[in-house]
Image (cartoon, rainbow, N blue to C red; front, side, top):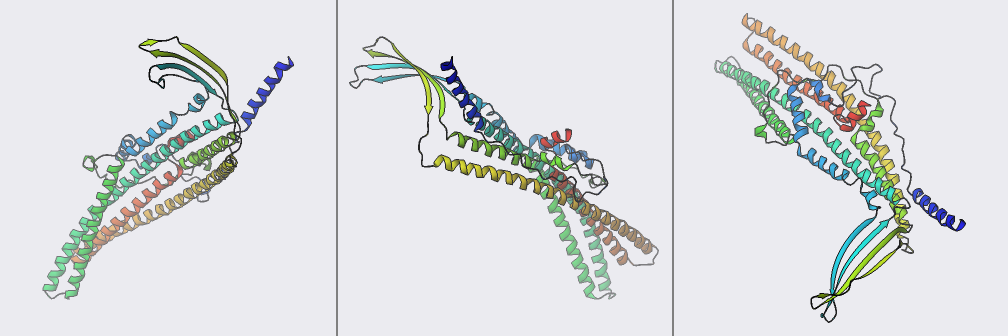
Amino acid sequence: MRRVARPALLAMAVLMAGCSIAPRVPQPPAALPQRYAQAPAHALGPAPDLAHWWRSFHDPQLDALVQRALAQNLGLRAAGERLAAARALLDTPQARHLPQESVYTNEEPTPGSTASYFQIGFDAVWQFGLFGRGKSEQRIVDSNAALAAGDRAAAQVALVAEVARAYLDWCAASQRVIDARALLRQAGQRLHLQQVRVEQHLDAPVTAAGARAAWESARAARVTAESDAVIARQQLAVLLSTPAAQLHLQLPGSMPRPPAVPPALPPADLLRTRPDIQGAEAMILHAAGQLGIARAELYPRLGLGWTATASARTAGGEIGRLRTIPSCGPVINMPIFDWGLREAQVRADGHRLKAAVLDYRQTVLTAVSEVEQAYATLRAAHASAQAAQAGLIAARQSARASAARNRLGLADGLAAGAAKDAALRAAIDAARARAAEGIAYVALYKALGGASPLATVGAAR
């Protein structure tokens, strides 16, 4: 009994050693704050909807564009294919350490070419994934799948954010085109009136030159707005992976705006669902797998092999007697001396694992900072939009008052035209401010990892 138990104990010791070589995957501290510095003490608005945040604009056209982009964007579809490719390899480490079987045939002529030997063989090899090799290989394919999932999630986050941004740019530019054309017409009327006054010697010629400069400026503003609208439309077409001619857009009745009250920031722990943080975690797992394989290379590769080869001499169209030679035994590949190459690889992969941990911590800090900055930018943009809207209301009131004075003969047409110009410029400024507020809203949700499948799962939990 003792002679039987000793080999069993030795085999058990080898298997236990095989399980203990793979390094432990580090779990670095996330260093996430309890609350954001930019967040007020009280919740401003409802918790953000990370899964469908763009619906807060209440714009059906934007909703439709996002859905089309998610279904049609070629870059997102390519990322999905890379994810499917990575997931297709998830079971390969286990299969690699199962018995592998193969059959082969061969025919070799004799040196005199008067006869040949026909051979048929069967091989079976079972390589054991000892010393942490199998576990480390599984970690690598798992991390590759996680990285591919993170890349696809990042592509989806960026795609939704860019669609919303390009749409807001298009809306703002299209509205600026309308206001700029009205401003150009007004500037043309004022230029004509000023030229008439100069011809009648009521004003100096320099006043006509000033009116001409204002008209040229208004024309340049119109051209710039039209160009911005075309660029935003082209960007949307690219994001939807469709020709621009097939992209039909309608200018909404009013500029899409985010909620009047900025959202309350979610718990910082939800930032773990950001694709870049998920990717940093996957890189730690990948580095740990590489280190485990490097450590396993310090130990012999063990397995079992079985082969059977049958051969027969053929000559003159006749096949001789078939002879079979079977063999079975252990397969051992034991490293002896390699000038320290394997030890150097272990040290290098150990440093790479430490670097991956440091990269993860830096990624978390960067994510927190991006959310803080985005939230501060949104609050500032919200205040600017409110101020611009108040300025627009005041300018329109002034324009109506000047128009009334002109009708009553208490002021000339130039004063009324100047007031109307001021109202149009205030409208252009307000449109820019509203677009900036919307883009800041988009940037906040992009920083939070909104529209990511990972963020959706985290929010549901």
